[in-house]
Image 1: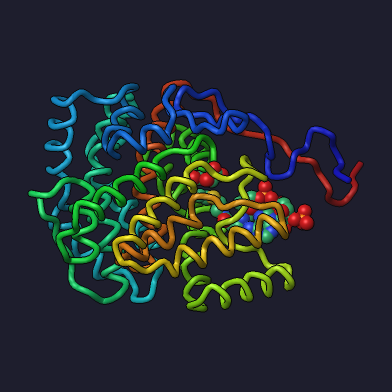
Image 2 (image 1 turned 120 degrees about the horizontal axis):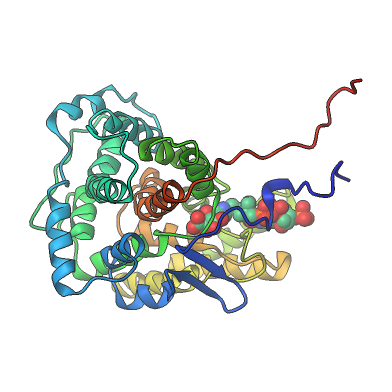
Length: 369
Ligand SMILES: CC(=O)SCCNC(=O)CCNC(=O)[C@H](O)C(C)(C)COP(=O)(O)OP(=O)(O)OC[C@H]1O[C@@H](n2cnc3c(N)ncnc32)[C@H](O)[C@@H]1OP(=O)(O)O
Ligand SMILES: O=C([O-])CC(=O)C(=O)O
């Protein structure tokens, strides 16, 4: 029993902002981004089309797409004088913490940091999006004690991102699947990380500060960190029977199964998980090895029967990343990298129409006169 009727733990169901960016229409099973259905976008458009949609309000025409892709390439590589920072990141540090540190540093390179106009904020967002594959991959490599990886400017955004991770030129199928995953992760209304970034931006803090807060939020395993946890769980065993036994054992121990459940979808499948499961199937076809898909499907069935819970995006994203040859500690950093477009749109919106977030409390401390 709570002390006040108007206290909602976890702000469950509370409306915290008016936004024209996105909306989860759970009834219609649609994720709306600026009036368009994310799942249809994922079938027809590229990640950068949706970046343009988020920041400019509509998908680009061919000419705009080409000029945006060319522009972004200018930022594939970070300024040379920032590179020593990567060497300072302690070995074994999680790359999300490394990225948070590098993002913070970049604030110092922004000569117009106090300018919060939407034009300046959008320009910042494009630059950061261009830089994020470099930041993501090298935060991981640095914490592994590996040398800096450099981009290949002849490649498109997603192809270069994958190339920097694996050191190999990816196939067309791999690029298409990776790009689709970035697109699916791009924006999702008001998750904890987006809320955190809007709360920070509402003090008139700059975009770097708001993004640094968001990355801290996203690392937790109830949020973005779940994708890494899912892959660790899948790696604990290597057969369908073994995975079924593992899930049942965890449920008996009252453990949460990562990759299942969602505050908004609750007892429904995340529409992004359905399309990502199909991407996993394509990679299984490529390898003629369906073990991971069968393991995931077995887990899905047990969770539906035992708990009435369904997969969220992280459940199927994890094995897709695995089959793309991506190391597990990069799963959440890639999520953040993709999500930066959505976060930036929210920060622009918050700065453009601001009201400081400052809620009250239900006091449960010592009594007083
Ligand atoms: C892309 C994303 O960020 S999606 C989210 C990724 N996170 C995960 O996959 C982590 C696992 N899932 C969870 O912890 C939760 O489902 C959350 C945090 C995502 C959302 O849950 P909430 O709305 O806070 O629900 P809450 O955690 O209170 O769960 C409600 C009930 O369902 C159960 N439940 C919810 N998720 C799970 C799960 N993954 N495994 C087992 N039981 C679960 C809870 O134990 C609880 O049961 P109870 O009422 O018997 O105590
Ligand atoms: O919406 C949420 O709470 C979490 C989520 O799925 C996301 O951020 O993609």
